[in-house]
Amino acid sequence: MSATGLEVFDRTIHLTNSWLDEIMETLPRDRQLASHALGAVLRTIRDRVPIELAAHLGAQLPLIVRGTYYDRFRPSDAPQNWRSAEQFLSIITAELSSTRPVSAPDAAHAVFQVLNHHAVFQVLNHYVDPGQVEKIRHALPEEVRAMWPESKRTPRRAEPVS
Image (cartoon, rainbow, N blue to C red; front, side):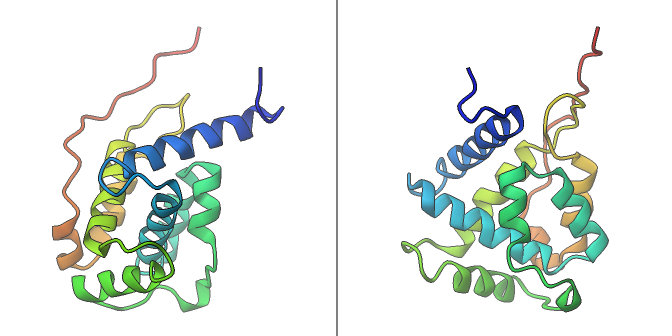
């Protein structure tokens, strides 16, 4: 039986909770903190990469995560031109200033891990295209790329539908 009565909402709640659970493997076990960290890191990435790449990534995120990603988005202000990991982390720190204390490097690491984990192409499931994650990663300044390890996962294809 459906929790919300709509399959699309049930699916996005499940996917979002899965992403938050993975973040909480690195950060403290606090779902609200995990949600804030996910949003802070995703929005910081979104505002730095070219708009086309940001839109392509946004389209692949689970519906609730997509809402967090586009929260307070001002396309006319993007892309920003910060260049250092220090600037990247200071933006995340500012976004997380109203939450329980968590280090920006830990938050970034946790979100990078989630994006890498879900960078698998499957037609029937909601995963982020590994090529898109790599494009986003390579659009970031070198110091930030150094913080975000390449995904070691081999992309899988979904089984054909009978």
